[in-house]
Image (cartoon, rainbow, N blue to C red; front, side):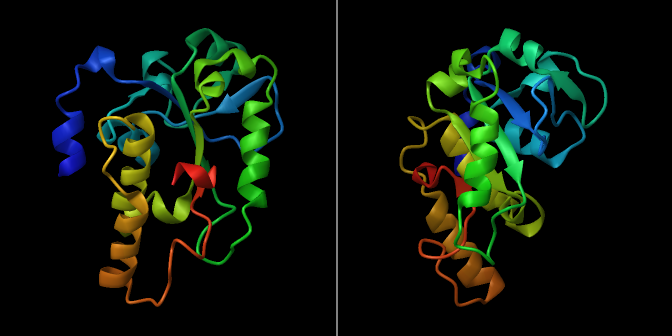
Length: 184
C-alpha cells in the first residue's frame, strides 16, 4: 500500500522509462523483453515505471528488440530477470556475469541507465508468486530511490520469510536476490 500510495501520485510522463531485460544470451544485436501480459510488466507498472516495450509498441508478451532500438529509446533504468540466484546460493557470480553482459553491450555505455548506474538484476524467486511484494519493493526502490528512501526491501523480504514461510533464513547473510548487492 505504501508503494502504491506514493507512486500513484507521480504523473505518467514523470515516471522512469524501464527496459525489462529477459535475455540470457550472448546476442549483441537483440534482446528479449517483457511486455503487457507478463508479471515483470506488472511489477514495473506497480513500482511506478513505464515499460519501454509498451512505449515502443512491441508486439507480443516476450518480444525481441534490436539493441539499436534500446539505444534510441535510452531508458532511465534497466531491470533484468535472473534465475542464477535465490535461496540456495550465496555466490553472486552468476548474476554478476549477467549484469556485465548487459552493461558491456556495444553502445550501452551511452544509455542513461548504464551511465547513471541504474541497471539491476532481480532473481525470479522473489519476483513472482507469493513473494512478489518483495520484488515489488526492490523495483520500486530502484525506480524511485528518493521518494522511497525509507523503504527497506530486505526488511520486507525478511518479514516475508519469518511470517509466511516459517524458515530459519537470514536474507542479509544468505541468498542472492538482487545485483548489484549494494542495490539492496
